[in-house]
Length: 201
Image (cartoon, rainbow, N blue to C red):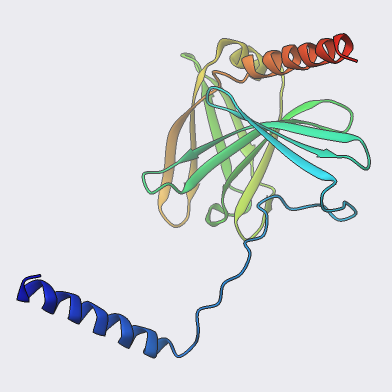
């Protein structure tokens, strides 16, 4: 090893030792908790999350073995060039089976702001007002009506924008493409699974 290399290694070792001494406390290691938060009333080991990727969208299903209940949603996230989530929306259903779209934006956007969606060439427009915020996100919900259904069938690319008090207007494009295909493939897969179970008792 050359003298210059030895000196660099020695300096790095000294700096690392000094840094550890400055910290004044031992390094503590712990088990990382699961990313899946088990709801109140459920039991560890009896609650399962299944994640299935599709084009542009991800299917997330939470299943309770105790209650025999399964809740699914299709979700898509848009990130900036630093990898931070600037927008997320999920197709889900109400308790009585009506479809809706839940949208999430950073908490810095704030209550009362609007998320604007423009779809198609004309375009068709939807404005959703934020009605709830927590420490991480603000939320807005829209029903899936005829206009949105039309663009889901067409796989339209949407122009979405909102005002963030910290950085100004945030604008980007988000595709609906893949959202129609996913439920069809899920249904086909479940039919195949049921048929396989019947043929292999």
